[in-house]
Length: 152
Image (cartoon, rainbow, N blue to C red; front, side):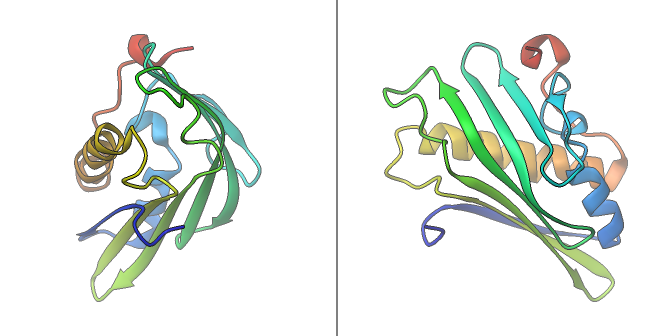
């Protein structure tokens, strides 16, 4: 399921602990209005992007400073015919030490080119991960959706 799934990675000059701390704080890089538990095994949280996207993520794996997995347990994408395309997919964050740096690889397992939302969702993930999350890790400030846009 991950062969052609959306995947991105980058390297930062920060320790794995700082990378992990940023990931488990998606309000600081994905959406300020996220509701729920984002930093605990079996925690669930809801992300909303206006009327276009709402999804519920469950944390199914949490290995501090190494790995985090969110399973999408419910989604509604208003801009595609199959509104629940994300249901059952997983967002996998793999953190690895790379000399003095840390590499973060993120795979949205199941978000494949056959999905109608692939292009739009890949573009969104590219911004939130490669720009917003990376800036949060490097500077302490990400670029999440404002609360008014993502609030439930």
